[in-house]
Image (tube, rainbow, N blue to C red; front, side, top):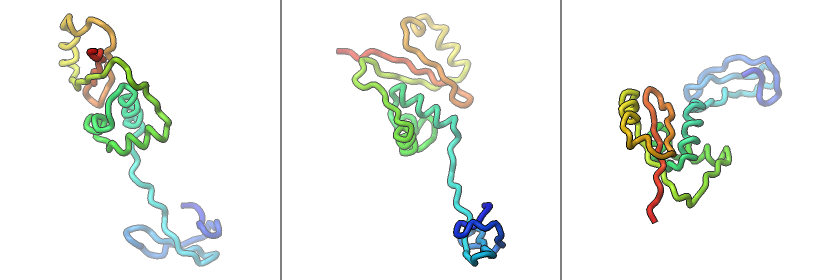
Length: 137
């Protein structure tokens, strides 16, 4: 807080506490004001991961379970950044959360590395493996 929101003066003093927030009084105009609430901010890492997972085809609630971020927040980010994903594709994603040893064991099996459409992304101290499978007609 650098200036009074009423007159833009930079001369103000503390004037008590209201609802656990510091209150100020402007010496120029006598206006009482409090510092604006900053709110809870989610790290950009989770925003990027949520949008990546959304583009990979996961639902809002699946992303909520994986990242621990509200599905409403994910929905708001998709709207905010105007993210569009292709619809009616013949593939759908399946995902697994694996540790680094489990990931190594997964790729050591021959049938798991055949074909295309596997993505591995870091998820904290674990890894998420996303694999696309073709819908059966």
